[in-house]
Length: 312
Image (cartoon, rainbow, N blue to C red; front, top):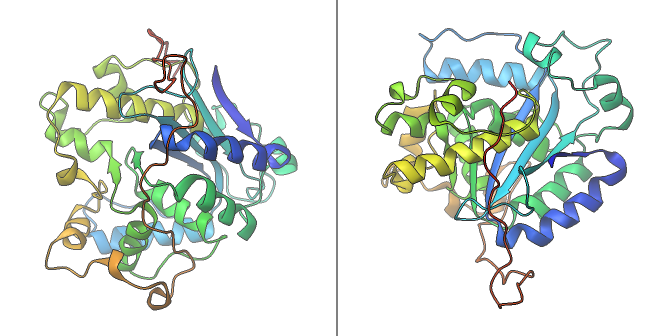
């Protein structure tokens, strides 16, 4: 079925649909597409220096798409067929005035002029609806090399406010959004024998695992679908301790481990008044009963159709 494009005219309608089915599909694979980099960070940089560049880039550039794909605990998706994802098209990037895009984004087929005309503005209204409909129902959230995905998501959920000044504050806000249930599959791949220590891009990792999907790379909906499929494939093939790998972003491992340490101050115990943050998402709730049931009384879900064809 491919990606469902979300524009200003169908934004609330699609979020209502997503909110209705989220209790049955608690795993949310995420991806963002954004307008490149002002500062490119050398590998030798410390994590604090790396975050400084993330903050500078995200504060001064724009998100183009937010994509997400829903899964249940067994890898099923809400609709039958070759998978369905949602991608929210944002209007904030101006192709006539903003910095030029990286080559992969330019070749991805995103209609930037239509985004500008019909896309969703990353406003306070957008932030409030996303928090209520997508992020307040708990579950697991999955990214690939998610440092920038989390940074842009935080910018979206605060209505475009600058990122926190320090890396520790940034990770604390990430805890408040994801409730400690965020997974970065690039980091997870380090614990899987044969995946070259996780030093693979999304396309190469998908090819190595023979994960196939129908769509166009570097569009947020498709990339989120592939990210989610890889997440489930890793769990099928390897024994992965979710507690060990949760809330660890590739490239910020030391800072993430420090936040997770038992002796560290637990950001989830803070009161909203003490955060000084523009976003405070409630802790994950227990899943409510699934509203969709089959004639046999069980949950009506549809297995993923295979095989898929990746069109990179």
